[in-house]
Amino acid sequence: EMLMDEYVFQQVTDFKYLGFNINNRKNMHSEIKLRIASGNNYALAKLFKSKLLSKKSKEYLYSSFLRPVLTYGCETWSVTKEDEEKLNIFERKVLRRIYGPVIENGEYRRRTNQEMYQMFNKPIISSYLKSKRLEWVGHIWRSEGIVKNLFTGRLNGKRPRGRPRQKWEDRVKTDLTEISEELIRIEDSEDRYRWKDMVEAAMVLNGL
Image 1 (cartoon, rainbow, N blue to C red):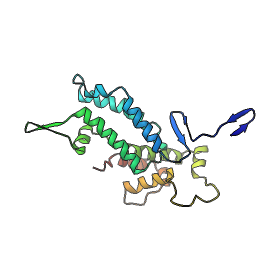
Image 2: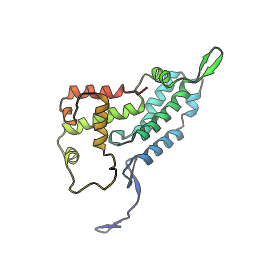
Image 3: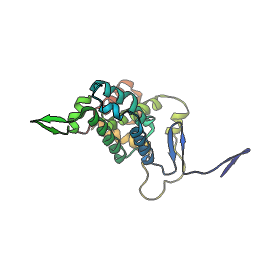
Image 4: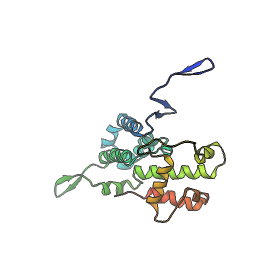
């Protein structure tokens, strides 16, 4: 427990703050599970299967209502490839409900991932996460204040032994290496126009 004035704060393993789950495990696994569970419980499944709504209307419902539930605050996430793939799988499940199967030679066939994303014509959710991280780090670097000071500051001491946890900054640097073969640094975000190109490039990394 921690005592501040007359207030007593208990130590917990996780808690929710501004809709975001913070835990002592220093990873995003539980948060991703909670987001997917929230998406599954969102009352849109029947609408996605409805024959009364057009595919465009269903796309709008997903993009405007469900995807924001999944990605709220994602610019601050340090997710693993496994976390991203879980979100991609959930998104593909939703898109399959929206577009349904293909009829070929009188038989039904599941649409391929590439076919679905060509119809959706928007960045896959993992690429959207990358673009939001890069967008946010650009805002941080060009700003002057406590957020930038916290980002650029370094704590004294050593990181724990063993394989270190991936920091948010590490994840951003990985994003940059995936976007371009050139050496791109976070400091390059001072150039707004060049950085905007980086953000847009992240959104077309569909990995299909």
